Length: 524
Image (cartoon, rainbow, N blue to C red; front, side, top):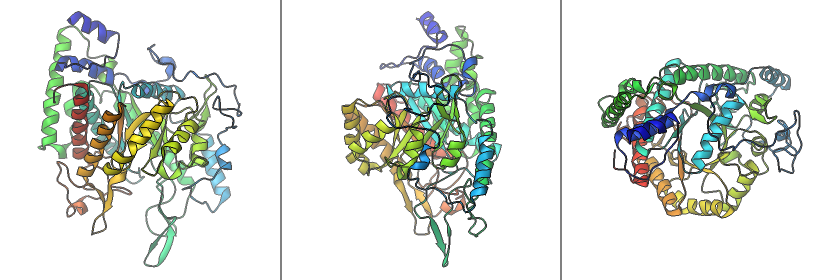
C-alpha cells in the first residue's frame, strides 16, 4: 500500500527485494542509495541513523602505540613501517629537503575526518553482507597540469550517471568512491627509464617527479608531496560543492550528460532510464513526499587512492580525539597494490594500524593461503567492511583462480568485500606503441567475476575502473568505436589508458543488467 511505502521512505529503511518491482518502487530504493551528504559532514552534525557498530573497537589511550590494532601482538605506530622493507619508494638525494617537506605536511589540516571515514566503513560493512555495491572510478594518475574544475566535474558526473544506472538497475545502494584527491603516485616496473642511451629515474607520478624526460624533471622532489596535498585539498573542496551544493540533485539527472556522449546508443538508454526516474519522482510528489530534502538533493561521495608514498601517508596520519584510533587523513579509503602487498613489507605494516577501510589488489599470483594471511594482517579483528579484495586477473585466469580464493575466505569465515578491477589485467601495447585496453576483454572479465560469484554463492561487491569524463581515445572498443588507428587522436593519459565517459556508462549498463539478473528483475 502507498501508506506503507511513504512510511518506509520516511524511516530511511533499506529494502533489498528479490521480487520484480515497478519503476516507482525502484525509485524509492534509489533514494536510499543516493541519500545524504554525510561524507563531508562531521559525525557530530549527522542525524542519528541505525548502525552496524562495525567501528566501535575499544578506545585506545591517547599516544598509545603498543598492541594496536587490538589483538595484534606487534607494536604499531605511524612510523613503524620504516623498520620494514618498502618497495616502489622513490630515493631522495637530500635528506634535509625531505625532512622540510615532511615537517610542512605534519602541520597541515587533515583532508578528511574520522567521522567521514567511519561513515564509509558502515556502508562497506553492508556491502560485505550483500546489501550494496561499490563503484570506484577515476583517473589512472592525477596530474598537476590537468587539474581544472571542469575535469573534476566531468569525472564526477560520469560516476553519478554510472551510480544512477546501477542503483536503479539493481535496486540496491551504490557506494560511490572516486580515485581522486590523492591518486598521484604510480608503481613502476623499472626504477630507471632509458631513451636513446640516456638513463633517468622513471616517472613515478606528479607527487614524486615530473613527466618530461630531463634530469631536472626526473629528479625526485619531496616538495611535490606538498603541492599534491594542496591540489587534493582543492579537489575535495570541489567535490564537496558538487555532492552537497545542488549539482547532485536527482531532479537534475539530465544535466549530468556529457556533450560528446550525445547521439550514442548508451546516451539513448540513459535518457530512457532518466525518463522512468522522472516519472517516479512525479509520483512521489503526488503522494506527498518532499523531494527537496537532502536525501534527494545530495550524495555521499568518498575518495580513495593507492597507499604507495609512505612518508606522505605517515605525515597525514592523525589520532582521533573521540576514539584514540589512528586514521590516515589523506583519504577516506586506501588500497595496497599488487606489487607492494608483501606480508613483511612496509605497506602492509603501515595500513594494518590505521582505522580507514582498506583494499588490497590481488592477481593470479596470489595463493589462497597468502590471501588469508594478508586478510589476517590487514583486518585481524575480522571487522565487516574493513577490507576489500580487489581482483585483477583477466577473464581466463580469474575463472581458474578466483574460486579457490573465495573458497578459502568462506572456509575461514573472513568478512571481505569482493571488488573486480577488470582493467589492469587487460592492458596491451599496440604495434604503434600505444598502451591500451580492449572493452571486450574488460567486459569478459566482469562477466567472469559475476559468473564465479554465482557459482560460489558469494556476493560480487563492486567494480574498480580507471575512467575519465573527458572524450579521450585510450581504450579500444565499446559504443565509442575507438580502434588502434584512432587511439592517437586524443590519447592524453600520463600513465595508463582510461575508459572515456561513453565507455564507462556502457559498462555501468552491463553491470546493472547482470545485477538485475541476480535479483530476478526484468531487463532495463
